[in-house]
Amino acid sequence: MKRHSFVTALCLSSVLLSCFTPIAFAAIGRYKRWPVGGSTRFYEFKVNTMKVTKLCHTRDIVTVNGLYPGPVVYAQEDDRVIVKVINEAQTNVTIHWHGVRQRLSCWSDGPSYITQCPIQPGQSFTYEFTMYQQKGTFFWHAHVSWLRGTVYGAIVVYPKTAVPYPFPYPYEEHTLIFGEYWDMDVVKQEKAVLASGGGPPPADAYIINGHPGPLYNCSTNDFYQISVVPGKTYLLRLINAALNMEQFFSISNHKMTIVEADAEYTKPQIVDHIMLGPGQTYNVLVKADQPIAKYEMALGPYMSAQNVTFQNISSIGYFHYSGAAINSLTQQALLPQFNNNQIVSSNLNGLRSLNVTNLPLEIDTNLFFTIGLNVHKCNRQNPNKTCQGPNGGIFAASMNNVSFVKPTISLLQAYYNTINGLYTSDFPGVPLKIYDFVNGAPNNIPNNTNSLIGTKVHVLEYGSKVQLILQDTGTVSTENHPIHLHGFSFHLVGSGTGNYNPATAQLNLVDPPYINTIGVPIGGWAAIRFIADNPGVWFMHCHLEVHMSWGLAMAFIVKNGVGPFETLPHPPADLPRC
Image (cartoon, rainbow, N blue to C red; front, side, top):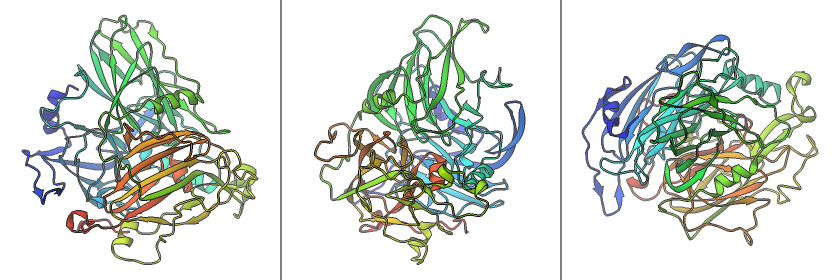
């Protein structure tokens, strides 16, 4: 899609109800602005079921507006976005607007039992938020159970009118959403996995824009293709919406230039392959500078953990030059080995912000969170069926050895209404026990690999300048974990292998990337910084869905500041009830 026609696409979209003329931001005081938006974009999402036929089988899946992937939300920087979600399915649903910082709109963030109760069948809820000082590639997805396995779509936010991209203008833009496909109901699958105590089954296929590609059964013609003109440059918006797999992507014989990560511009980085964890987005430029032919676009697994079963068949699409015969030989794409940590590290280390703003140089809140898996002792009946984790245990996961349990009503409602007994404010700011996290972690499974269980939050004063160390652990297995923080982007000021050591860690305080999801390196650490200037309750979790289900999550409460522009607004009238 060419950018100059995006306003037409906005107003003609089948799901867009209205377009308003831009209105200026109102400056209140000298520095404070209420994020009211420029233009207002109205969308209506109807969550329903549809039949799909893939991999030789036909089944019902939950989608939005009968589309898989779902409809694209288009906007410009500073626009107000209003989406009415009507639940016509037979399962609960919420929608999370991944990467949207939700300035003073925490009630619209979307994670179930964190900022809202689910939208029950037959009910509706209207999400309202502003793309305040945000532009780029985002996505939306369900945030209840594993429903985001089919309920997801792109958010494309363009710069303000007459503001150019900071890179050569592309001939066309295309959005590629990566996912996983199962021949079973994903909500039932989560329940089955948790009941078993073991790990999840591998996906039946990887998909690009809903298409598995010709390497899978009954899928010879079920592929996604981009038709390109020789010599032209294309902007590809890459989104990983997969449930449980990190993924490599490449285009045969073509370089990709990374120009944006998590909807923030980066200095150009040229790569042959790129790894995206679930929740990560990248914009890349690709020039059609090869001989006229049909080139593969390949999507395959990155698996850093030990003893995990995964799908090893790649999803294939095509980068098809005009003039190439339909039946011409295809130039095959070569993906890295599934456990190639070097390429992942190279991708991460090469990210540099194009323009750095709001980087806190002085820190007043230092936090240190360990992340990883646990195995609990079997305490269930029918252990052969319910304790299928390592050594007859039950899989769990944790931050600072606390496995998060969602409450029965949303944390935000409990906090706002001062409802006692639903959570405690004692999530530890540092590990409860210090040890060699990577090489000396407890591993006498399941005798010393248990975690605490609870609904614990960590409270931050408004305006806190936070540095958070995320440390991978070797309990069960070291692993690359894509950690996502709601309500904020953060500066990735450092990462490395082994245990974090403040005396030797090299931090980048010049041009760190500004992102919202960080793949904490396998057997390593990541250091992030942010300013806690957005009041509300904000979820932080591993974006591997099974890890979040096992408890690899926590929540921050950011307290109110001074005055209405630093205070959590009241809840909307149609907020769903539990």
